Structures are given as structure tokens and as C-alpha cells.
Image (cartoon, rainbow, N blue to C red; front, top):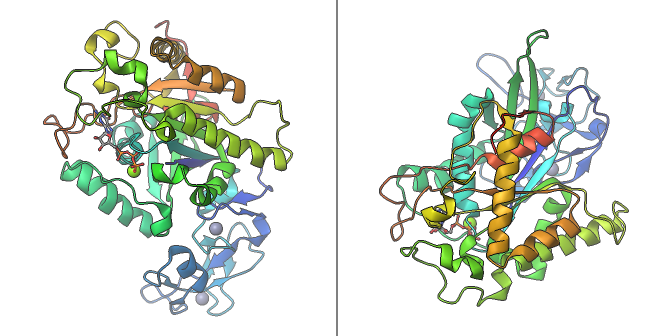
Length: 416
Ligand SMILES: Nc1nc2c(ncn2[C@@H]2O[C@H](COP(=O)(O)OP(=O)(O)OP(=O)(O)O)[C@@H](O)[C@H]2O)c(=O)[nH]1
Ligand SMILES: [Mg+2]
Ligand SMILES: [Zn+2]
Ligand SMILES: [Zn+2]
């Protein structure tokens, strides 16, 4: 599974390469193409033609007929189409011809990848996180979330929002990338920051969510497909299903369905093995690129989140940081963050999964622990439980990353 994002660091002029959030190619800014805006109303412009590169990327000619792309130096992010003379500000990747939003081209970004074993809850999490960002959390942060292409809008509705949030059906297992092309969902998250003395300022981050099939992290060939994505990532979110941690058994509600009879009977889906495979792959790539030495810890920050925490007995959560809801609006509560981190660490150690924590501290310079629930309650057979989808702390890892990226302030509230 996977999730990705790119962030603009305020005030940093970007002459560095822009990583395409679709094909993950690092593109020099002067190579970014323009796309003619075509005919609009009474404005003349070029007719749509089949864009072969885009069709090759999506694996289909549907939706690949667009006004042509062209190379130009451009001025202030705009250029005139050599064929029809109309000015355009639409940009496209020179490799895959997908749209590159100008706010994305203008600010150096970061990609955040989302990874987890089969059944860890990745697809459900993506559905819920995006919905939260478009609604409650977006309002709280004064942030808008806009899809960067039409396919993202359609796929989010068809594969995520409609089944899970409208029809309240659990999502099917994500098909392996070996059976069809896999594309990320690409969004631009723009946050307006208001300060007392300065004018409001917009910061943008491209959120690239790649819903990988857990299955694909097991086979070598398909895994390579995801490695480019992971390698391009500047932050990683690992999702861990507590039902896969053998020691967690005792802390689960009696009613939890679908839990494997013998947990850990499939070593391939044990969280530590999934994380170790991804880490080794990253190490090889980063090492080959001279970014890290053999004994160095990887510098990419990782957020590790226990999913489905609604399956835990209330006794485990009572009086704990995880039990209460997050405080603060539009800021990261650093005391709450530390308390949750400490509590999840304690849970992992109680569950004989302390190794996971140790391994992460050995491999990564910075990792933070989270506990969340996308559904907020136990599903009933193949449907969401009677109370509907009630996400709990689902946005926490993203808030932490926004904070790490300088897009969100941290405050001390004295809660611990
Ligand atoms: N109790 C509880 N169960 C959850 C939650 N999220 C997911 N689940 C359960 O976990 C199952 C798998 O969730 P998915 O989101 O499909 O997992 P995935 O990681 O995308 O799985 P693959 O696509 O097979 O890799 C769901 O069908 C639910 O039964 C949650 O927040 N709470
Ligand atoms: Mg899935
Ligand atoms: Zn591209
Ligand atoms: Zn034109």
C-alpha cells in the first residue's frame, strides 16, 4: 500500500528538479511542457488530439484526447501555443504528459508514501483521510484539497467514496498491480496561513496517494514497480494492523471478526517483515544514490500508525492519550503528540512487538507512532457498522508531517 505527498517550503526559490507525482521522474524545471488550453467558448484554440504518452501511462486511449503539449521557455509560468497563439498556464510532465499544477512546479515538494501489509487497512484509510481533508479537517486547517486530474476525481468517487462512505460497503481487496496499471491519486493541498502582522500566505503540498495492494509487497517483480514511488518519497506512513501482532490478542474485543485464527501464521504479512522489506529496498536505492552510508540511519521521516484501534478493549484505552480526542485547531499539540507516541510504544512493548520499535529506531533517524481508526467501529460482515463511518484520529500522521514540513505550527498545551 502507499501514500505520497509533496510540500512547498515557503520562501525557497525552486530551481531544483520537480518530481512528477505520476511517474516519479525528476524533471528539470525548464523541461516541463505546456499544454494548449484548447477551444473554450468563443476563444479559438487547438482541437484535441490523441496524446500517445498519456495513453501509454494510463493504459487506455479514453480521456487521452487533449489539446497538444509543447515545449517553451515560458514567462511567469505562461507561454503562447505555437499552433493557435493562445496563452496557457497549463503544465505537463515531459515524460508521462500528466498535468503538473503550477503551484506544484513553483515550490519544491515532498512525496509521502503509504505502505502496509495486505489487509492492513490502506484503502479504507485513503478513503477516509481524503474525505476528512475535504471536510472537517480541511475546514479546521483552513486548507483546500483539489484533485490534480479528472481521473483522480472519478476514481476517488467510484472506488473509495461511493462504496465505503455512501453505500457503506467495505472495500474489496486491492487488485495487484500485475493485473492492471496502477495510478496514484494526486491532490494539491493548499493552506492559507494568517498571521497578525503579515498578509495571508498560501503554502501548497501535493498529496500523492498510491493505493498499493498489500500483496504486491511480497513479490519481487511487482515490488520494483513501487520502489520508484518509495524512493521518491520524502516521508513514509506505515500502516500496521494490530490484529497481526500476536501479543495483541489479549487486548482485543471478543467480538472481533476476521482475525486470523493463529495470528502470525503468515510470516509474509507480519508487520515487521513488511517494514523490513521496504527498508532494505530503500537502503539499497539510497545507498546506490550515495544518499546514505551502510551504517547510517535513513533520513526520511516515518509515521507508523496502528490502524483499527477500535478493536482494542476499552480498558486498554481508558485514561490514555489515545482515548481522548485530539485537541487544538489548526495547530499540532506537541504534548498530545508525545503522549500518543509514548502510549503506542508502550502497547507495542506489551504486545511483544517492541522489536518493531527498536528496528525503526535503528533504521530511521526519525519515527513517530500513532494509533487511529478509519471506520471508528467494528464492521458487520461486509458492511460498515451501524453507527456509520466515524474516523478517529485518522488525520494525526498527516498533521505531524505538515508540522515537519513547516506548514503547521506546533504548540505546547500542557496535556500529557
Ligand atoms: N475494526 C476496523 N476494521 C477495519 C478498519 N479499517 C479496515 N478494517 C478492516 O480491514 C479490512 C481490510 O481493509 P482494507 O482497507 O481493504 O485493507 P488494505 O490494506 O487496503 O488491503 P489490501 O488491498 O488487500 O492490501 C476491511 O475490510 C475491514 O474489515 C477500522 O478502522 N476498524
Ligand atoms: Mg486495499
Ligand atoms: Zn510524469
Ligand atoms: Zn493551441
